Length: 228
Image (cartoon, rainbow, N blue to C red; front, side):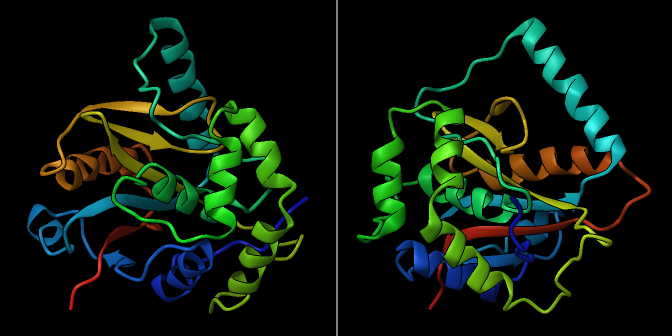
C-alpha cells in the first residue's frame, strides 16, 4: 500500500491540521534557516519541528548504526511520548503531523474528530499496533490523499518514486525526541526546556544534515502559535 506523498507546504499542511481538528490558533510555518537568529523569528510557543530530508542509502546505513548503538547501550524514553510505526509508504508527512500534535495535547485542545478519536482508541497500544490501526483508517487515508494532490509538486510514479522523508522533533519531560515512524523506536537526543527547544532541536537537525553533506535538499517547518 502506498499513499501520494505530502509536500512540505505550510498551506497544504495547515489544511490537513484543520481536518485533524487542530484549532486554527496553531499553524505550520516555514523555517527559513537553522541559524540561531533566524530560529528566533519562529512564532512562540513552538510545539514541534518537522524535518524533510533526502532518504538515501547513507541515511539507511546511519539509521541501522544508530539503532544498533541504542539497543546496545539503551536509552531513556518517557512513557508520555506518543509514537507510532509507519506502515504505509509515503505516509511519513501525515505520521509526522500526528506525532507533532499527539505529543502536545496539553497545549493543543483538539476538537472532536477522527484524530481525537484515534488517539483515544490507541493510547494504550504499542507503536506497532498504533501503526496498524493508522494503516487501516480510511478517514486518515482520504484526508491525506485529498491534500497531497493539492501540492504543487508532481505526483510520483512507480518509475520516479519519492526520495524524501518527514521526521518530527518534540519536547517531552525535559528531553528532545526524534519521532521517525520508520525507526525502531523514538530517539532521545538529550535534555532541553520549552525555552531552548527550538535552538536545541536545530542543533540536532544540523548534525543530521552534516551526515549527508552532498545533499542540500533539506526543508524545515514548525508547528507554532499563529501570530495576529
